Structures are given as structure tokens and as C-alpha cells.
Image (cartoon, rainbow, N blue to C red; front, side, top):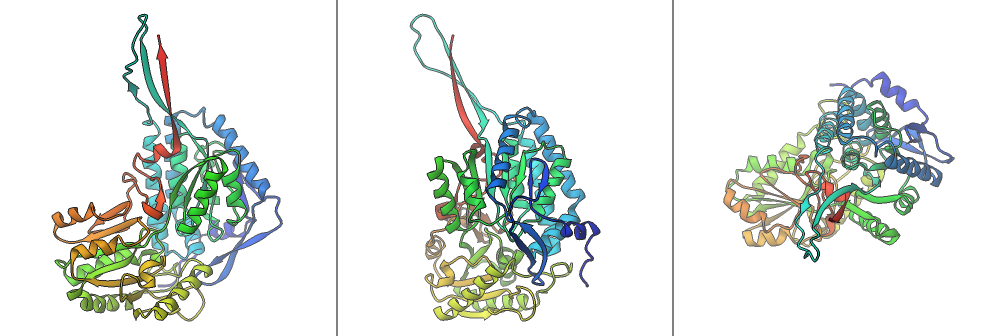
Length: 497
């Protein structure tokens, strides 16, 4: 099948002069520097975006603070939820337009852009909208003694923290932005988002749709630019009350340290992982292979919760790797705008170079590359799905996050040893156990050190289920009701009467 023809509105959007979105309007900005947005499937420049400066950061934060104290504070909880629901409707109305922009910018297959990036973002918006009228405190029984007949009562109330700075990665530019802005807005906060410089376009369009949905000016702002100036300026800004960041562990540590040193600014950090998937011996080979592909190769492995370490019973290892090699060799790799493509390019040149360097590290480490492990010739940042057989838990690719279509496999014989290997990492974002023995799976769940443990599934996220990491994989939780704690302050009120 040939590539999809781009919608006229997509073509027109790409031709615009792109900058920022501040106080309800597209803003060019005062800077004189532009950066290129490159289609990773063709290596062609598809748009130019003006680099943000401190002037845009100040303007965006001022607009957000004014809205926080004014228009958004005066918007009822029910209407906040209605605004998010209307934005969800508009995302679905413009689904194909947003999906094509996302695919052009990130290399995500058009099917994933439609159903996971945009479609899932709309579902999350509706979930958060339902919480807007349900944020509450509690009444408390006070035990203070009465000396002159006086009585006491107490209650708590939750109040929005203020202006939120959201720093967004390149792998899911719409969906992760929606997670953060929906949580902030539901709680009564306002937000300034900094998308990745690799995928800066889609949220500019979403911000326009947010205005159409009736969200007041200044509630959602976008400042584009690199992480060296715009990001730190947002974190250190005097009006910033919270930072929410999704990205790598080294950058997350720097963000958290910077926020705390600034003025004890609260943070939510959803960081990377070296996620493990354990397959037990009661499973047939075909089900193991299906699970591996689900866990490790979706979106070219560019999912923070994707599995990278795979543990296979020794007696099944050879059969599993042989069958997996056959399956991966038939996977269609190509243009992400072709609806039949199963795997597109890596999202950007820097990440492509990183993956190639990891292939070389694996070879130097003595790991066996069963399939893949080299670039695909031609234009675009394409690499094949790769299978690497490790020698020990200490192999480089059993320890270092790849964030790519790279599965590293290690055999085991003892299930107690398996748990130890699963936990032998400084990361703790996600893991999965695959077995027909539910009792055994449930016992393993409590032993595995991870913020999320799936059983017979991997990578699926639901807005009702909190998500976040432990150990070096992050601080705080998103989704469920857990997000409320991170976007509100708890105030206690005591009354004597």
C-alpha cells in the first residue's frame, strides 16, 4: 500500500511560521534563532520553529499566573470538566490531522498515532474531566479539651498548587502532554508546557483546539525550545509552583535537583527504566513470542515502560529465539504513513546514533546478536528489531537503557534466581510476569521491585490505574486518583466556637 496523502490542513499548518502559544494566541517570539523539525523517515526538514527566550518564558508564566488567580479560579469545577470533555471531542474531530502531524514529526506509525497517541489522549481527557467535581477534603474529630464550654471542629480542603511547568519528551508528544495538562487543569492549576524540540508541532495545534473548547486564555501555554535555556528558566521561575517531567533518568535527576534547589518546588518525575519481562516454563513458545513482541517492540521500543530485559527458561530459550527471529524478519519496516507498516524509524538522529553505539557496545561486550543490530541502508533513521542474547546479568545491554527496538535475553533455571535478576537494576518503573499459574504470579508480584507489574500483558496503561516508578525511575504517580495529591496542597482548618 502507498503512503497516505497528507490532509490539506496538515500541509497548510506545516507552512506556518511556528513559535509558541501564549495567553490564547500563537506568538512568534523575540528570538532570532530557529530550529528544524525533521521527518525521521526521510531526514527532510518539514518545518522550522523559533527558539524560545526568557521573554517568552516570562510571558507564558505571567499569563498562566494571571489565569490561575483570575479566569480559571472563577471557573466552576463542573465547567473545568466540561472544558476537558469538549477538548476530547475536538481531538477526535481532528484525529487524522493530529495523527499525521505526529507521524511526520516522530516517525510513529500512522495507526499508532491515530489510536494510541490521539485516541488514547481523548480517553484520558474524559477520565480526568470526571474528577473535576470530586476533589474534596474531609471533616475531622478534634480531641482538644474544653475549659470553658468551647467546642472545636476541623476540616481539610485541597487547593491547587498554582502554575505548573510541564516538560515533555519526544516519544508521545500529545498523549503525555495531555496527561499533565489534564491533571493540572482538573485540580484548578494552569500550565506552561515545553515540548521536545524534536516534536514541537502537535501541541501548538492542540493548544488552538483548547481555546476552541472554551478553555480561557492563559490556562494552557506552550514555549518551544531546547532544554538548556527554556527548561531551566521554567523550573527556576518565581511563579512556578510545580514541575512535572517525563524523560530520561539523568535529565530527571537534574530537573529534580534544580527544582528543589530553586525553592523546594514540588516535582513529579516519570523517568526511564530497564524493564524486565519474565516468562515462566508453563507457557508454549508461541505465546511467549507474542508476549515479547507486545512488551518490547511497539513504537520501535520507544516507550518508557517497554520491556528491554527478557528472562526465558533455559529449556525454552533456543526455540523462543528461533521463533522470534522468524516473526521479526517478517515485520514490515517502512514509511510510517503507510497503513500496513508495522515498524517505522527511530524518532531522531541523536537517538539513532545512540542505538547504533549500543549495538557496538554489545559486540564489544561479547553478547550474541541473533538478529538485527545494524542500520538499514537508505534515508531515514531505520534499524531492524533486534535480538541480543546476553551472557550474564552484568552485560551492558542488561544494565543500560536502550529505549529502542532491542530485546536482550537471558536464560534462567531457578525462579528465586529469576526474581533476584529482575530486581538487579537501579530502575523500578515497570515489569511483567507471564504464566498460566495465577497463584505463582501473585506471589511474584509482591517480590518484584517496580511501580507497575503486569501479569500476562505489558505496556498497557489505563487512566484509572496510577502509573509511576520507584528507585531511580521516578517520584510521584500519574492517573487514578493519585494525581490529585501531586497537584494540590492540603490545607487544615480548625475552628473554636
